[in-house]
Image (cartoon, rainbow, N blue to C red; front, side, top):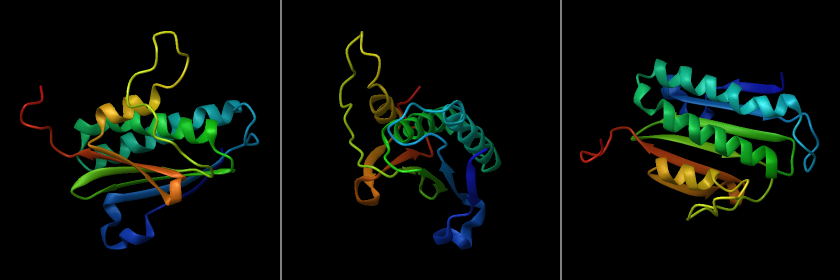
Length: 155
């Protein structure tokens, strides 16, 4: 399995229990179709994030966090130009999920794609569940923040 590194975020050493970082090394060359192993990697990371959120007592964020992780990793693998994808998860005043790839990222998806479009829904879905979405790492990454508590008017 090419999940190459799993470690606490170095910048969060005092709060080891609330931060996680891993690096995934793709098996297919950038620009080529994803290998079967690469296609399974979002699910692997999703299971890790689910376990972390349970450990941290944030079960109510699992669905949204899984969606964010899946969409961002899939985009990084499908559109990235380098071999590695880094995933960071940390809890502060919000749950932060950051995915950094090796190529430039765009945050298109302000409105939903057409009904017959075969792709293009990822960023739109991420924006729907995240309190904040922005580019990081010099345009190679996407950082999403999820509120820890539901707004009072939420169902």
